[in-house]
Amino acid sequence: MPDEASASPLPEGRFDGREAFDVLLRNAFAAAAREGWKEMVFSDLDFADWPLGERATIEALQAWAVSGRRLMLLAQRYDVLERGHARFVAWRRMWDHIIECRAAGEASGTEVPSAIWTPSWFVHRIDPERSRGVSGAEARARRELREAIEECWRNGRPAFPASTLGL
Image (cartoon, rainbow, N blue to C red; front, top):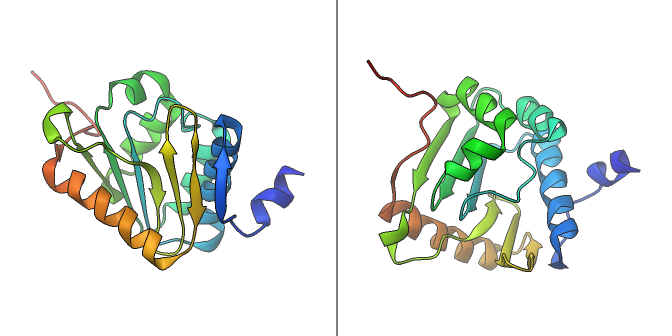
């Protein structure tokens, strides 16, 4: 059954609960690889409850990450991601040339949206605490989400380097 779900069109409408959010994310990662999305934006406070450390997620991102792709990561902070998603951190190191990361920081004054944005589809977790939100392809909603992400991006700073240089 999971193969059928990952091959179906991405859903539009409201979702409610952690399990529904996780399914949306997994299906989005699979669709990105299958459909060859050129650009994705992952945005969250800290990605603590995203399924980024799962083997299937990394396999989908690996299949997606080919020439001409771009991934933007925006978070308030990355320490939880670094500690909790080792597979993703290793994948991020390998694909540093297509990934750009920024931290909005506590002083940005703007709450970082919990979302995946692509030019054709989005997931926006409006209530991260209860994992409630909306997904879809509607142009206006995608534009408004992108604008909210861009505002945080502009106020942010480079973060989550692929490697740390030191003496």
